[in-house]
View (cartoon, helix red, strand yellow):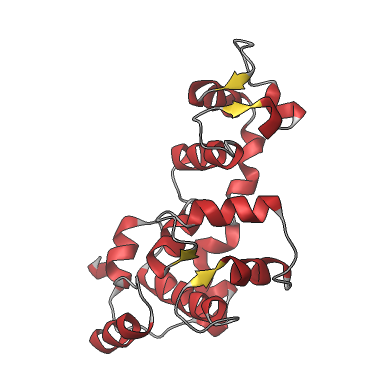
Amino acid sequence: MGCFHSKATKQFPGHEDPVVLSSQTAFGVSEVEALFELFKNISSSVIDDGLISKGEFQLALFKNRKKENLFANRIFDLFDVKQRGVIDFGDFVRALNVFHPNAPQEEKIDFSFRLYDMDGTGFIERQEASLSVILADSNQDGKIDKSEWHNFVGRNPSLLKIMTLSYLRDITTTFPSFVFHSEVDEGAT
């Protein structure tokens, strides 16, 4: 594993040890290594700098980096936790973790709240939400706070279906071309 880590660190700023990332997420070590292969493909699709730009993110989602999509832009912004305009590998894995079937429900609820809270005020306001989401405004003050959102999602769990990507359960079998033959023992984590 030493070779994997030292080579990756030089070429990919923000690269983190797969064992550490695995211990912080629902992904196994081999899944983190498979995600690294995916990350490398995305991050080199426009500029080979070891980081995912907004254009590369759009290209990965839509096969067209010029197509603007508010939803994709918002997800990019949430993945870009350091607010640098790029996503490094550690941020990529941690952000994808929320979509893992084994990720805690609370994380999915929090991420979905931040997704709708477009201006980051801590509230989902009418102009940021669809009609069905407005129904969460239980105190009728024109905005939805985290507590109201949590209660609404609790009564309507189907809202979180988009927050689970079942193929992330074992990305190494979903995308066998990304399998990295690790020398790390999964049981060691």
